[in-house]
Image (cartoon, rainbow, N blue to C red):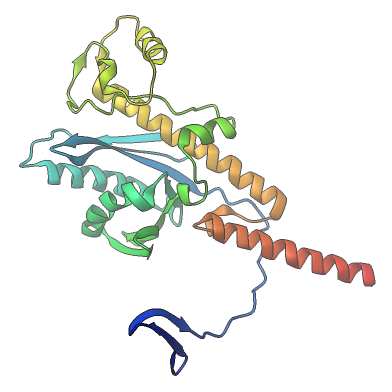
Length: 284
């Protein structure tokens, strides 16, 4: 064992096996409760197709609680694909970065692992990105454009479960649908794609989906937008219900907390201070 300043190094058989750093702990700050519910939330989703084992974004949708907006690329041509994706994301950001949505929180479900890495690449070309990254995960991303600011967050870090399971748990009206992820032809128009293009559905679910079209033409673009917008609506309902639940019980807004541990700690601190204040009132 060797001590150097505030660090302690442990060696075994001449190899470093452990390092301890002595740090001063800070007292737990009181949590400031909120006077009103803050529901300044936008939900967003990004759809991709697999081309040469690479996920390529082709659709972006978002929902503000009232209106859905979608942006679809025109072509998967390898020569113009990068410009197409940049145009798609730029159009969406231009519509969001206005006074109405200034300081809104934009939630993706799985932003920290999947969607975030696609977006950051293009957002950095449009405006100013200031990400918070922990252990390779994008916890949140502050983004500025045209003097307006929005924050991208990952709802999965608050509610670590699939969107389908969350929709059922929160009993939302807009439940996640199904879509043939295996189909990569974004211009396809014809019969309902074969079941081999779908994943995690059985033959009964597939037949029910197929019958819903009553032999009508299946349009990739139309169905992809419908599916993506439904995901955004479902996530918005889930977050709104969760936000109301936390606010009604603890007077806290989930917007302030990027992860479930941070929210849990805030609730713990709130409960701790509440018990102290209650004891004081009893003794008075």
